[in-house]
Image (cartoon, rainbow, N blue to C red; front, side, top):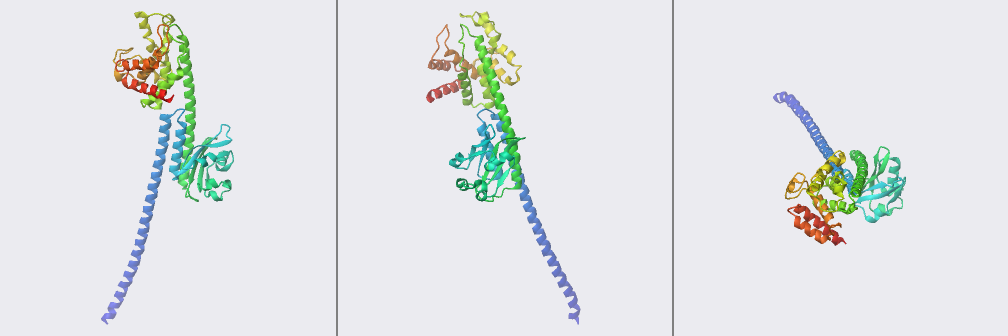
Length: 414
């Protein structure tokens, strides 16, 4: 009887425990699954955040590079950086950048990575031909999952041997297409993620805009250089007299200014202004009376004081030209001396702008190797010896050392 009385509660207890354990296990499975999904979500978000951070860093790097290194010789480096960034975004080891011809009808590879050179050299496409030609024609991104089954690659065993999948995205600004970026994968049906494809499109658009701005910048720089060259030639004509030869070798002067600046590791943004200063340092003499400039004999102290005004006259002349504002101090102080005995301000040592110190050495060298009616020209060895004598008194020793290195490397090259 007692056992019968306990049987019902025990059965209820066992049933309750069974229900509870099943519920607990189910809940535990749900919690475990939720935790797994949360962890996957966290990892996905972390991966996306990392990808976006990389993307932002790549954009910042491109912008900084174009801003600091913009110049006629830097475009190939820009293409290289754009390609490296595209491959990083898509997590692929190979790719190329192709640009259009002036008429927009042909495409050629301008840079590549991870591809055999013979394959790169063989790629010549016309508008509408192949994947890149089609991307140029439509202005849209093209994804090829399997090159072996794509009709556009029939007969191109050389391509199939090295590439299996690819993405081709136009370098497009509004309706103008400058070329394409190709990103190549070594396996068929490569998992090109939708997010990565969108990032690649955005990056390609911004890269195309940056390169267009670089073209405009370079064209503007060419205009500026030609204008400065014209001013320098006008100055030569003004000073064509018994005291000066009519034609300074402007090309040599510019090359020396650039080479010395680069030897001293100046950034490109400064080098170009040192070039300008080397051409224009004497422009203030246009404000000096012709009788003084054309005087064949020795100047009087009063006349020499007039000549000494030319850096300040130059400052007044060019300070109103916005794009030449960095040149103003270089020209104003190019007659200062390392020991502080120069003019117009008596600056000493590193108080003198580095651009001025470079121009001072180049100007002195040009003067020494130029023929004058009142003295013969020195040869290069004699002029270099004079620069060495003046190092530490008239000239910055480091600039003299860099200048002599440029001269010696030039001799070795010939």
